[in-house]
Image 1 (cartoon, rainbow, N blue to C red):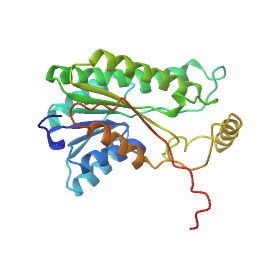
Image 2: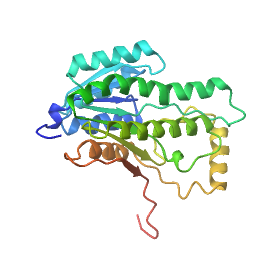
Image 3: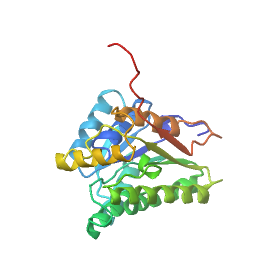
Length: 259
């Protein structure tokens, strides 16, 4: 943004206790943004915040439960108290549980929608309204390639990611001309903690099913830092430049390359 350095642009990152969120917090802290890390596992957020501070950055950890309206409001207020007006919001927190469209109970879908869509909208609404009033800011939604390549066996997750991209597109149109940029970073398969607590047998069945549908081209995964670099690039774009959608995919292994 014109005349502002990263130091002048405090950032909020949700789902910052691990994976893409933690990597994004580190990336933004490394280029000078004061960062507020939010997640339910606030102890894990504090560990990441310590790393950022030890590297010379400014960081704070605040508990955030996107299923709890009181927690969302308290987080937004505390973030503003700690770092001042928030200039960057990275909506990254997400729920991912296996379940088919017919076999999953309604509660599973409700949980995904509450975390991945409704909680995200509530937080962005609280922080984004002030951005519009100041005529500047960045809102970044981290989604998933399942929006363009849906996968069987994770129907609630697919549904929620389609919904959040719809929200992002509508918001981008509504905020055009306000100085607030709304962007989507859409990663492919990423090596994070998501899915680690699934039944290994279920994971194996899903991978076989995804291969049957041609959804697994190779077994390379993105590092969370790769997705974080895309988020950092989006919010670092100069005035007049708006990255509306950035797709990030893992590079396939180089054929015939010796170790």
